[in-house]
Image (cartoon, rainbow, N blue to C red; front, side, top):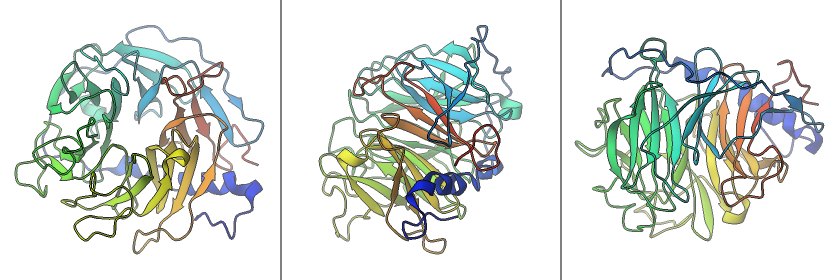
Length: 387
């Protein structure tokens, strides 16, 4: 289902959004696997007893469950085969396991994380081979850099890629496995404007690698993990049903972006912010004023892109043409100012949509219970009526 301002009555907008987002929520479960292996480490199991499960409650406005509360800047989120999710907390450096019913379990605190500001324990991606390798991948800040590591619970992270520039701001941090089975990462320029267009730097890039942290076959720059360049700060990565890649990017003062990603292309930063119409660079598909977006999370359902926004405090839904991958109409906003800053949006295996808030990150105004994970339930999905 596509969202259309012409066809969708405002009081049914949430229903249309949920239907669109959840239509292909299971698509990510069929991803391929990279050719290298990391062995067969022991099972990922919680290190402490689970906390009491909260009572998941329905938002009276319809369609939303507050799945769990009292989190500390939830950042990365990845689903396990049993339908539960692993969630990173940026500032506490903890990994939590959250069941489909909202029960929280502390898996472990990750050693070696030393971020300040926007740094810390950031992205998380579950191995496509999790059933056999029980491995997750983390993106986090240390005293000297941002890095990507593989982890089995109870152990120490094993770095696979180091030397990603780190700073108080612009650390990127999103991890995701693509439909080709390789690991992708969105990085930031860490405040160094020269990093984005410099192919020798790992900052201001989208990276593509094997699970050993090496350049994946077919990368555009020989021997390099760099997939695209000229970015300021990438925190959202997703693919549509035709395996086209999209990413969100934070602008500086004028324009936040949704980009379609083509390997080897330069997306303009710092020469261009937003649309530049300069043949040297690839223009974004959609832009927003920075006070209406700051898009950190991105999920795809077919050809509908859903963005979770921090400063904009809303979700955006963008319809993309199935043939061209280009927008077919104006973006639609939902949940505006309802739950504060929204960090991450992920389609769950059960067809629901999980969204994390980010009100305890030093830039929000926390309410009692912040931070939260919200669950949007599709029509007929049980638990909550969307109407």
